[in-house]
Image (cartoon, rainbow, N blue to C red):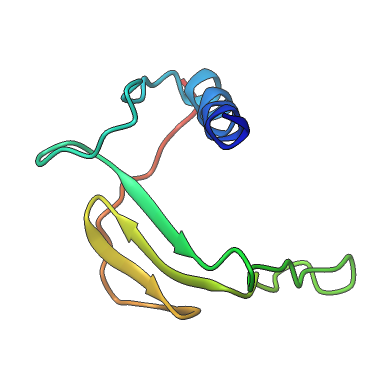
Length: 88
């Protein structure tokens, strides 16, 4: 339940800022827009500091943007499946 609340809260702010609506049932469906992050909870750690704010977290295995692999083991792929969002 706590994880569900966290994910719901993470989606709420972008919905307000960009005036978009996310899939409320939390399911992945063919043809739907979805970004998926895959990480290892035991290895996930923030590495950014005030002195080095652009350092990526460790433990992130993959990020899929609209079903396309965008980042794998800390390295970006050349694929660009997302779109730029402007404040609504």
